[in-house]
Amino acid sequence: MAGDYQRGEMDIHEQSATFEAFGKMTKWGSLAVASLLLTITLWFCTSAGFIGGVIPGIVLAVLGVVFLREKPASAH
Image (cartoon, rainbow, N blue to C red; front, side, top):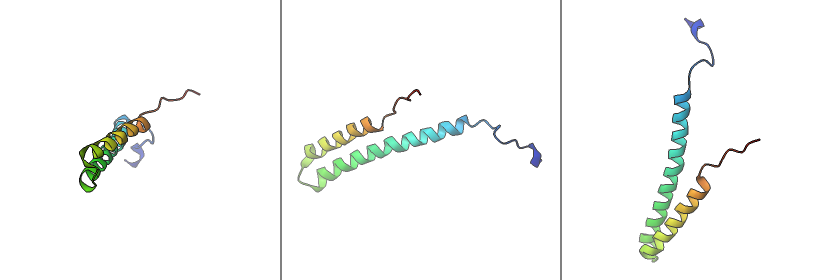
């Protein structure tokens, strides 16, 4: 029985896809939480008001999308 295992022969495409999906959900979910937290903090905890909270939240979201998006693979 112990001799039946062959290292490196198992198909791991599903595990790889799950790992990549988890990484992407973590990345984009963190950006969403950070933008929302910035917006509601500025809105309710300062005198900036609604517009003063929404504008920085949108700016953070746009900058996050620009910096976190997938980069094209460079050909060597």
